[in-house]
Image 1 (cartoon, rainbow, N blue to C red):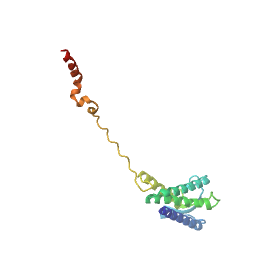
Image 2: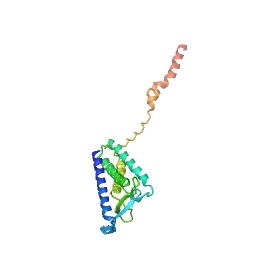
Image 3: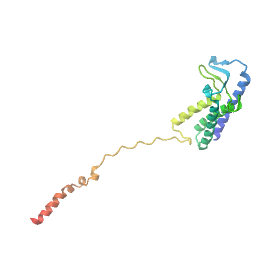
Image 4: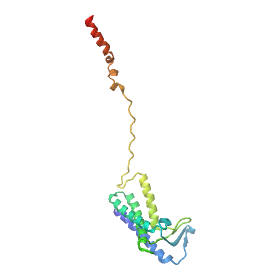
Length: 197
């Protein structure tokens, strides 16, 4: 729990500080191209989800972010895995970072636009919270595929059932193990004839 909350706090602080600096310094400036144009620092406001998806459903995404925060905090009570703590901490921090924008930025509570500022070629503009959410999602998928549980144990596949043993008819057929059993009717008839003889 402590590790999860620490990671979440670091993500939120980095996200909110970067957004503060972008709003303060880039509101009236042209985008800044870095690394030969591979990375561009720009200032945009996003009413939708991560990577500018669903721009017409701001209220819906606010509710989804709140639900994610609640689910993660409830899940954390069963958490004993460092890797899951890192992944869920990044997811929680990213969700809170963008949720803070929706709650406290214009145009209003629950309808605020998220500040985005990182742009890559042929890709939507995003922020550090979006990056944390994406990395956390990849980590969660990998942990699930590798079979790691929240308690840190790795789920083991059930062993394959052993092939059925060949049926031993001798156990169910007394005549197979007792050669004299097949002769018992004949021997009985001979015993019946002996008095008449």
